[in-house]
Structures are given as structure tokens and as C-alpha cells.
Length: 293
Image 1 (tube, rainbow, N blue to C red):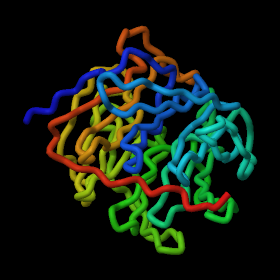
Image 2 (cartoon, rainbow, N blue to C red):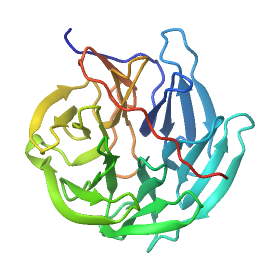
Image 3 (cartoon, one colour):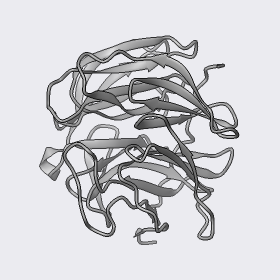
Image 4 (cartoon, helix red, strand yellow):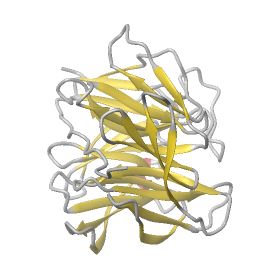
């Protein structure tokens, strides 16, 4: 079956990001960062899209206990009650120098949320990578980051991938069960493909899929860092992929039309959600954040 990218929904996001498929609900969640909203769609052609407002720009989300999502807001983490729409603060993050906000994030295999920050309207490496522990504490993992992206984990959870988009490379670390990082290495350099790395996910075979935001493509890298394939997508600026659907074999890709930082487009497809079937690849179920809050 030949991969067939399509735009399944008429709406367009300002800054679509952080798609996650909830296997418990058979539904896709994602955010419009600058539109300050969380969105849900069941993947069906006639399915309605639900929306929840957030009090700040929302960089990324994670599944949590049933009926809740974890939010990475501009300057801290919060829990969204999907029933009432209430946003309950969890932990604050103090940025080095504004303007900054939290950006890309993903849960590790132990249910902790790893999320990085980014600078706005400048290139200084004032950002950091944090981990929200299940008890609500925030641990700083890395410093010296300008735009945090591509956070994801190998199927066994023992490799963490992460990128500073402005540096143009995805790095990898050994990630111990207690969350200790060691053995930093360059995993893949995306600059030869015409873009720094944006959001990423890992499939069931351990291959990493990353949005090449400036190249209108999603790249797939083998666990050893070899480039395996480049997938063209019909949006100017793809931002983040995830696998979903009943068999976790559909690729969903968010995109942007106005990042509020550098990138913007008047293309009618800009900001659309992309759906790609026929890849003959399956993803992994997302691990919910394990905090009891």
C-alpha cells in the first residue's frame, strides 16, 4: 500500500504541536500552542473535534489518569480536567531570561514527563531540559538549549533522544531506569536534509520519525542513526509526528501557519493536521504521566 498523506480536518492551527494518541479512548489529542487550546478527535471522518482552553501558550501535553491531560504551559506544568475544563497547577519552572516558554515534551517509560524550554525572538541558549517526576518535583537534566525538540525514547526506554533545533542534530543518551543520563552522542544530523529537527516519535521497531519543519518532510532514522526514508507531507511547516489509529499504524503530523517566533505561511494548508496511512509501520502506545495529583 502506497502511503497516502491527506488533510482530514478543515480547521487550521496557528501552531499545531504535540500529537498523542490515547489507546484507552481511541482518540488523538494535540495542541494549538499559540491558539491556547487542547484538541481531541477520534480519527473518524465524521468525528467532531473538541476543544479546551489553556491559560497560557501550551507547548506540549501528555496523557495522564483517565479524564485528565498533563500540560506544559509557558512557565510550568498543570493538569487539565477534561470533564470540567479546570486547569490545576502542578509545578513551576523558573526560566533563565524571558521571553521563554516550555516546548516539546514526552513521557518516559516510567511515566515521568520530560520537557524542554525554548527562547523566543532570539537564539541564546538559555533553555533547559526538565523532568517532572511522578511526585511533582522538577529535575533539571540539561542546560544550554535554545529550542528544545525531538524528545522521545527507545522502545525499552533506555535511550533518550533530544535536540536543540537550532543546533541541527538529534542527540542520544543512555537513560537509566532512575532517569540518570550518560553516554551522550550524536544520533543524526538533519541539516543535510534542509532543516533542523522538530518534534519526533519512535516506532515499535525503534526507528525515530522526526518532523523536518523547513523541508516539508518527515524523516525516519534507524536505531543506529541511518536515514531510512523521507516522507513528503502536504503542509509548509510540519512540526511533530505520532502514530495512532486502531492498529497504531496511522501517522499523524501537526503543522503551523504562524509560530509567533520566526515561521509563518499564507498557504491554505498551513496549520493543518496531516494523516498518513499505508506506511506498514506501527507505533508504540503512549505512557501516561504517572503522577497522582
